[in-house]
Every structure is written in structure tokens, then in C-alpha cells.
Image 1 (cartoon, one colour):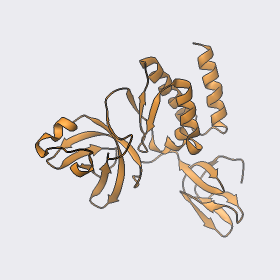
Image 2: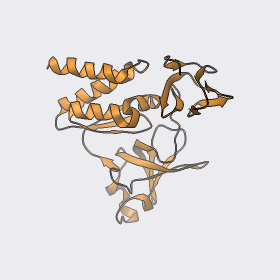
Image 3: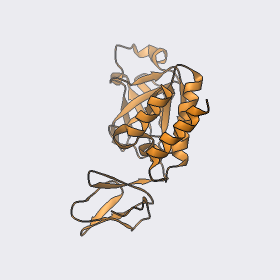
Length: 223
């Protein structure tokens, strides 16, 4: 592969039979070609493009964070920054809930971590019947472009684990670009936010993990 990390549509980003096409790429003979403008990422010979812009594309299995915008008799509509409606059915909430008491569980304005179970023509189905899902009641919530989420997470979670280690915060990254940060103090939470925004601002940079480590060393020395 070329050392270049940013590609334009139609550009050859890898050559050879060993490479496989990932997201936003396609294979043409023995070449992998970019289909979107973005950052090239290669893991175990799988080559993909991380787009730099564009709306969130919901997918089954994605963890997302959203706000309850309507309460019905059989569930909740949740805004996850998609044109399609996202619905959390009463059956996808742990425990028993009376149909007349849904607002006592989740009300309009509640922020919820959920997982997408299905995407179809009528909308998006959500669940909170898994560990780590449910209403957020503390910490802070920030928003970034969803296309930059992979860089914030890093390969196999390396980048987000680095942030957690240095800030001592619990961090949940929604694939829709909404991020929940929960620390023991507001200062810890704001420090984590600052680190995430540094990554977002340096999205294109090569060797970003090393740059983030140096950033933390400088920030912590100045405290």
C-alpha cells in the first residue's frame, strides 16, 4: 500500500491479491479503488475508506445515542440523527412496564443508549435489552460527525481506551456520532471532551495515536 492516508474517489489505494476491499472501496483486477473521499485504513489486509463527511448511515448492530421525542402507548420514538424514524418498542425494554406508565420509564427529553436491531423501509428498530444500554442520567453528551467515529474509537478500541486511561472516564461512543462521557468530576469529563475534539480536529493526521499520546503528556504536565 501507499503511505498516503487520504484518498479521493477513483484512486488506487492498494495493489496485490492479498488485499481485500472493505467499506467504500471496490476491487478492480488486483487493485483496491476508493469510492469516497476519506482516510484509508488497512487492518489485516482489509482496506477501507473512512469518509470525512456525510450523514450517519444506520446499520443493524450499531450502538447509538439519542433523545426521546415522543411517547406512545406501545413505545418511544427516539431521535438518533437519521431521516428515518427510530422506534423503541415496549417489548425491547427490560422488566414489566404498564402501558399507561411509559413516561415514568422514559419521557420526552430522556437521553438513551440503544442498539439497532433492524433497519427497513418503515424505519429503525431499537432495543435496550442488553448490558450497557438504557437511559443516561449523569455526565455530559457531545456530538461529532459520525464519519469520524472510527478514528475516535481506533483500531480494536485502541484510541478510546487511551482516552479512558488518561481521563479516568467511562465513555460510550454512539455510531451516530453522539458520545456520552461520565467521570467522577466535571473536570475529568471536560478533559475527555477536549481529547476527543483534538482527535476530531486532527482526523487526517498520520500516526494519530502517537500524536494523542504526546498531547496527553503535554496537557498533564501543564496541570
